[in-house]
Length: 128
Image (cartoon, rainbow, N blue to C red; front, side, top):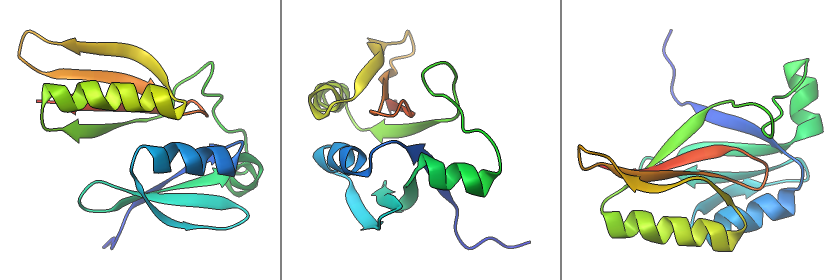
């Protein structure tokens, strides 16, 4: 089997809030409709579609993870410097995200933090 492309689909409550959050963080919008908003992530333009939860739930034929009580997947966003990690943490907070674990540096010199978007989808910003 040969796959041309892979992307992610997340469920959200409010498309306008999601669009505003990711635009404020500087991500390029891939498109939008009355059912989803979509963004490119990284230099290779990985796509994440953010569907209204009710649309995604019917397509999945079952419940969607409650991100307030459980975890789904965590994507890592790479940073080049410790200062960039610090900047990301500030920008996430100002855009309406929540810091799950504050920035810290490991013994190996790695630096990062975990945040959640307004719907609880978690991302790790990591510099190594």
